[in-house]
Image (cartoon, each protein chain N blue to C red):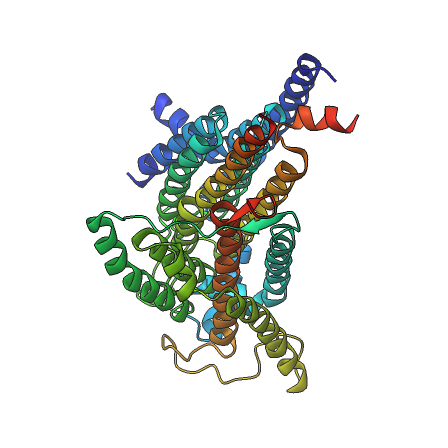
Length: 125
Length: 87
Length: 246
């Protein structure tokens, strides 16, 4: 019984911890990146941490998706639709912002001939 | 039972995120990001968010990796071109 | 700053942030708990307006103003990409040579293209009924068009996807969203208030008042935005060369 309650305690915080871990790993990649395109990819990893956190907050045990075209309203518990709507717009808008950053990177490569942040700093100094 | 699937999906996401950051070559990273996008879509579907799963599948596993690949190609071609003209 | 000092700074700051995040995670309501006050109210409000997919109701009715902000970010990002990735004075266009595509790849791409396109449009149209909507369907429809590049070549893709038309479509759908918002004001309600049209029969395509219209506007906006973005990046990667003529 003791180990079982420990398992439930872990599953109660595991999604939040995974979100925090993914965010920190993305930040580490951003800080140590030697290539701006790789840095943009790391930023995408950071973004996905926010999706995991939001959806984890809205989950309900035994709940189903908040779509009532095939279930009778009130017949089953549903998960939180508000956080899902937030995440949904974030996914698509985040991709276009990634595209903008990549466009900036392409432009930097054209003007300075490198995408290494350290070399870029030397060029300016 | 559903809990076990959620835990597996979460661990897959954490592992793939680490792999995406550890891959220093952007072209390889784009491929890992595509797999990460698919894993996230699976996780969202398991968390009863089919709307978000669908958009993550379209964006994370197709659009973002494609944009990264195109940028890599442009930057590589540019630097190859630059070396030629210097010689 | 030398790399070693920077790494130490990252480890120190990251460690502190990690400790704070873990402390916050332990105090959050347990994962899967039954207490979702906002969610319950959103579901009730969606059902009162005859919208089967609560997420579409949150996006295009309860938080329609917020979605307008998201749409503005999208529009601004696309505008920024178009400006950054234009053809510079010291560059010239060099159309790529058409190359042979393996027959199975060609067949597969040409068979899947219409299916994927129709799937995207279906997902947009049924946004307020089943999982999906303008945001997802727009991306699916726009990326489906690019199977043409896989199946045929770049020239064929450019023929089925006139970029100027999609740029105009992007601007038109963004303004359509605003016009629908102001229509609410003219009808005596508030900006983007869903009081303009009758709510219709639950679980039919015309249910939900202005939700299907706003959803369609966003679908068109996202599809045009993704097509324009990919067109600019493909242009840069495939066609535009440095140096003014060779």
